[in-house]
Image 1 (tube, rainbow, N blue to C red):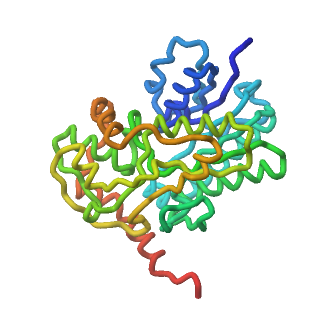
Image 2 (cartoon, rainbow, N blue to C red; image 1 turned 180 degrees about the horizontal axis):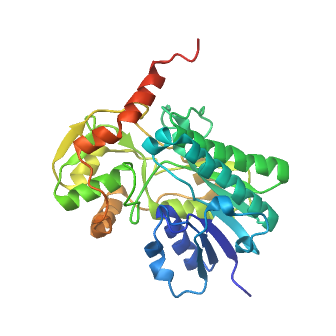
Length: 338
């Protein structure tokens, strides 16, 4: 019997490449679709000679119904897209094009291929400044274009489910971290910033007083949640995925070891992210396995991966986040209820 086929968009990226590892370990063939604008072919080096892994470097927006990459696929896991807050504020149309229209292109290819499940990588940023712990029924309130684009992609996926009968599940990822996280491009996730600073012997740029907490979840646990969402008989579901145990930025600094400088707190950022993961635990039997301490230790052990990442300083962060302060500061001052 031939191995089942899965398609992973963004499969050369951070979470996507770990998804490929997990699928191969579980007896799947994998077609990876990744234009390598954010992902790295090196993330798939372990599968370079494996005939069960094929990389296609086209842009997701160029995919059409009937594309042979999807032929015979059992399910599709859709991670591909563009991230980060600041670029989305400066170039919102690009985010709508890739994260919304690109998602629609993958939905159409999945529908034409008759896949048994489409799993969408949604973002917890859709909740905005949410009450915690945050349940999946919490009101949606995107604070910036990236969050909006990811939520519109999620809405599109479930619209295809309702109108066309495509079996869809979505997972709203909280704060994923781990090996292979992105090393280039815009100022963004704290781990990539801090790891390069540690390699350079530079101080960690801590936003505010560092007491803000994030629901950090190690990347292999994230991948395991997506496999469970793909293999389940359930569809039409949205789940949060996080560790359910927020950690402070100061705790991260403590584990990494080094000096810190403090930079201004930014508008639109929550003091705490904290996923209510009771639904995914109940429905799929999934639970996080990697402790924060063990996950950070694994990242430190692989720190050379971030050697070529940009080095961010308090001054360069101030320069690049001006548009963030201007746009989101203005948004905070507007009373939309009037």
